[in-house]
Image 1 (cartoon, rainbow, N blue to C red):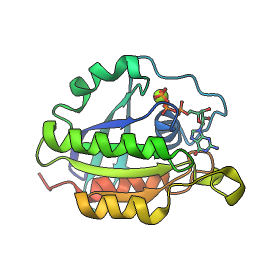
Image 2 (image 1 turned 135 degrees about the vertical axis):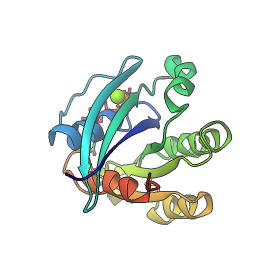
Image 3 (image 1 turned 180 degrees about the horizontal axis):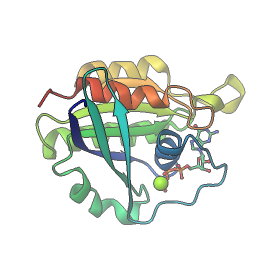
Length: 173
Ligand code: GTP
Ligand code: MG
């Protein structure tokens, strides 16, 4: 059998950007049009099969609502991987994502592997108001040494790829 490694992963991002929806798509390949806001945090696990090893992600899906902000350090402390999510149709959520990346670099483990994810690409179109440009997300990722993908939890586009890319970037034990 392939060696299996457990990896603690945390999702961070403004309320309603789709953190729980990304996890639901990754874990169950499902989508809910009216997903309830997360209270506190939710815990789920899912495996990612790489050619030479299995990564078991232990996922802490945090609540984005401001009243839960003080809990976040409990979940990113000791995390080996993080997914920082924004909504490509909500520029304010990209500003918040920048703050999360700074906070992780200041407070989390120095070798944490971080993916920046612009979610809800299915909603991005000219008649849907301002969109966070792909180049803006890519520039932040390049400056900060992050993986970067644009996703849709609704269609499933690039969701598996986020977790596979993180798994591939984790150091071998
Ligand atoms: P908190 O738990 O409050 O922090 O929110 P969250 O980031 O977990 O967001 P959640 O996954 O609950 O999604 C919020 C809303 O956006 C829900 O109604 C989802 O159905 C919707 N949603 C999530 N991802 C997508 C997406 O990729 N496309 C579209 N169109 N809607 C999405
Ligand atoms: Mg949630």
